[in-house]
Length: 86
Image 1 (cartoon, rainbow, N blue to C red):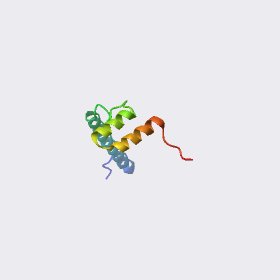
Image 2 (image 1 turned 120 degrees about the horizontal axis):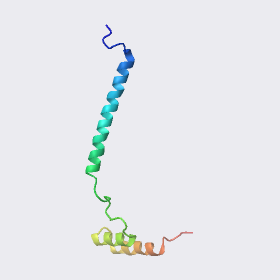
Image 3 (image 1 turned 135 degrees about the horizontal axis):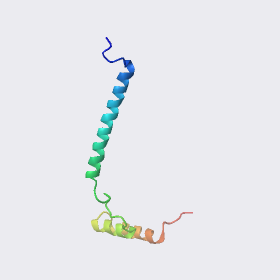
Image 4 (image 1 turned 120 degrees about the vertical axis):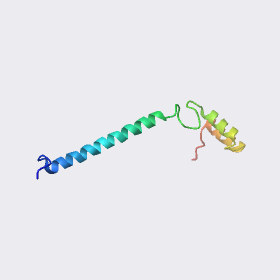
């Protein structure tokens, strides 16, 4: 009967694409707002930025993550470099 104003299949295609763009944009906007609102003020790593390797190693030893032998071995590697096998 021509109730669609003569747009035909192209009109339906255009309406479908515009709805996808609209809802996709709205969802993206919500995601961006939520992520920026709940973003932590610092990096979420276990060590603060700028910590030296010696400090990280000492903290792991203090927390009991590594034992004394492993602490001494890793500290030696940090100070002298890894052993090279020939």
